Image 1 (cartoon, rainbow, N blue to C red):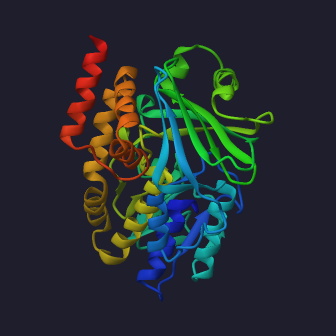
Image 2 (cartoon, rainbow, N blue to C red):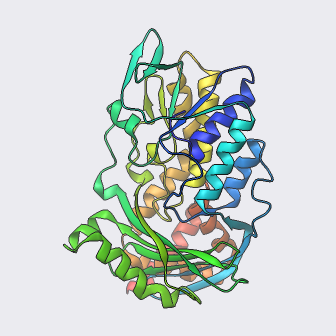
Length: 376
């Protein structure tokens, strides 16, 4: 496994579950714990994946966030309890725990930066020294392995950019807040309380919209976040530890590998184009990649593609379609307006944005009619 974030660690953990006697190597260029720019949100779907990996209590010492507040570009707000609480755990903590769990299961964890990749005698050879039957490439949005196997990066039109920081909030803050903005649409700011008196706060938009401003990215991202902070709740301190990161969205996803190399997580452009959520996709795709590697060693890529289609096919087609519709902020206004009046719609939108949900045609029609009525 190349990359020891959630996707790579999930693949390593699952491989050890399925083949306890097999040798599993987990490579990463960084030493853990290490920071990773991210919104830090871990939804109930991701916790289900952790349970499948034998880690049901990994987040038990972190307080859940039971409520979600979303404000649409037109100012329509919905705030309600989610069907299953989410967690907010800094990646410096979450990723390190996954790596520690993998090491405790017998996975060899090694600090190493991959520079070359060759195929030889049915094996994949990394840097002329590490040979494996299957390589799971989970080395992030700027995946070196993805580049080495000739899979192009996500097009700019399917790439977002965001800045993330931390700020002090009231210790009892337990509401995840998302505020969408028509400026530079699609764009939104967020505040996700960790539960210890701090919150992960940030702002993101599509990369082409940033470039259209003709101004430095730091100026746009930091400036808009600063202006939106008063809308995100009671922020009690300046934002610190600001870091920007690219998000290759699933609407531009490539083939998920080549030969005996399987792409997982951000390296496979598995990031929800509506919300920017990627941890659930990372854990799921890492697990599925390991299952394909162990269960179908003769043709792991074919098995992996089938597994991804079964698990995420309808969902990804749904988010593809919704991301196109969402180019109109009025469509999002209509969806949030319906969700504000119907709990089951709110729950469904959360499932689409944070998990593997789909939208029934009847509900899509309801939102479309509302959108058309509001435009009239």
